[in-house]
Amino acid sequence: MLLEKLQPFIEKYNEINQKLSSPEITKDIKQMTKLSREAKHLEEIVNKAKEYENTLNTIEEAKSMLDDPEMAELAKEELKEAENKLPKLEEEIKILLLPKDPNDDKNIFLEIRAGTGGDEAALFVGDLLKAYLKYADNRGWKAEIVSESKNDIGGYKEVIVLIKGEGAYSRLKYEGGTHRVQRIPETESQGRIHTSAVTVAVMPEVDDVDIEIDPKDLKIEVMRAGGAGGQHVNKTESAVRITHTPTGITVSMQDERSQQRNKEKAMQILKARLFEYYEQQRLAQIGETRKSQVGSGDRSERIRTYNYPQNRITDHRIGLTLYRLEQIMNEGLFDEIIDPLIAHYQAEALKEAGL
Image 1 (cartoon, rainbow, N blue to C red):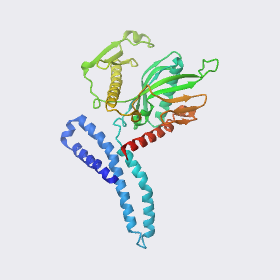
Image 2 (image 1 turned 90 degrees about the horizontal axis):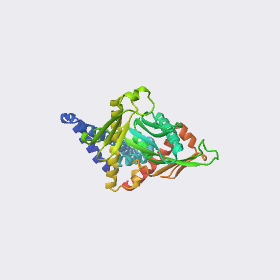
Image 3 (image 1 turned 90 degrees about the vertical axis):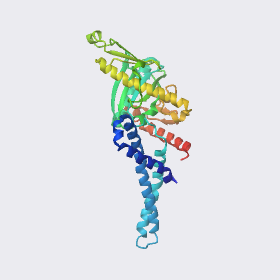
Image 4 (image 1 turned 135 degrees about the vertical axis):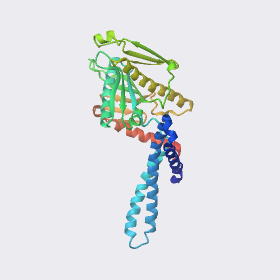
């Protein structure tokens, strides 16, 4: 019975709340943060469990009143309403019972890089960036470009955006991978369709609770910023490069005039990349299937094709094709792809969990 499956979650929620109210826990910030996150997720399950139990009680009470001539009509209405509500509630509870991705509530760093295709790939990075910024705006999220490397024709070799808002990672984690674009470049005189690609990585923004970095493992270099900037860049060593020596992961930052601000931004991105790196290792060790790693940001997997001549966008993971590419890109309507992806992977997970 579903109520029996919910009982351990209710008990765990009560136990965590007891711990959070103890004076000792306030001295341990990391533990308090961890427990608060866990309690927030469990609260959803507990509230839904109460609603489910109330609905079951309503059904029982309504059934018991069916033989009462004065109450029978009202009881029938209540019974019908409660019985119609039950399947949807059960489905919602089953989804909540699935193992939760601990990163779902986090902000993200969205990194888009030009791949094969030269200038055309760099231009598409810019187009994809605009579409994601529009999508973020549609959902009421805040987006800030933290690092960019432009080419000579207005495209981007690489751009990193920090997106802050509820559900940012839980929805955009499905964007990690290779995005292929097919269109006729403006410079193409013969009207031939070119195929190019960009890669997207989605990394949760992490803090010291999520990952610890030994300062001894960091090599920090400062240098003069390159590119435009006039006299300022020639006089000030404001650019920063940080290398994590055990993994070889390197982050360079020169977008800010302040060396300290560049260092802070570089550390933010380094933490996110390290977190992603260790997460990939962990998943590989426990032998997770690729199906359950939809949000792992594997850049080698081709996940989507944008075909401009046919106004077609296809997501290869679930075989979804929509003939409204221009509108989706111009208006940031990625929910039309993300919602079916979420439904698909939830259905797969429910099957695997036997719920």
